[in-house]
Length: 146
Image 1 (cartoon, rainbow, N blue to C red):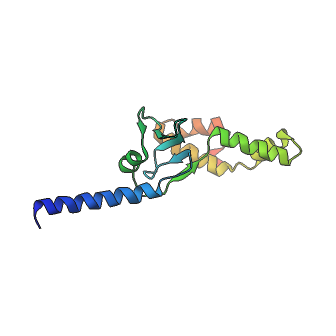
Image 2 (tube, helix red, strand yellow):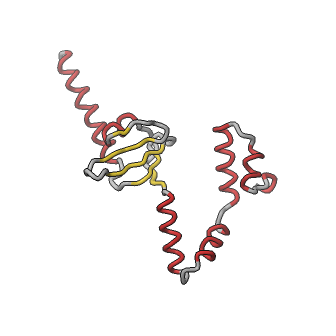
Image 3 (tube, helix red, strand yellow):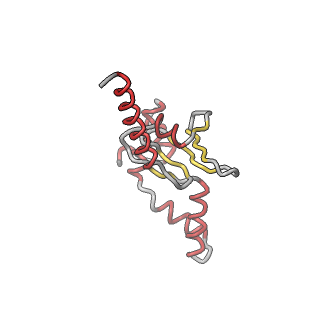
């Protein structure tokens, strides 16, 4: 096989990899954690019907193909929830509770697992080098109890 044949083989292999990655990318607009496990992307469709992919911290707008090629990894895509999603869910829960928004919010607060808050605080403290005790104080978490 000549150099030209090898080049065609590599091109075919790369195109197949891109197509497999493209197929696993989300089709529903929303906010997602990318397969790298670290980056977050806001996928939406413009008024003109074009897909746009905005990666947090990156001023460029991407296409589906450029995201799956440049932003790959071993983790699955994870749909995150926006504030609009949270507000809609709180409104839905309030409607199920006779419009009692205070009761819904109180229930949500009670359901917070302090261990999960502490885990997130530890994780984020390492990223920004903020003392863990300072973050725990902000969340009202006693680290000795966790």
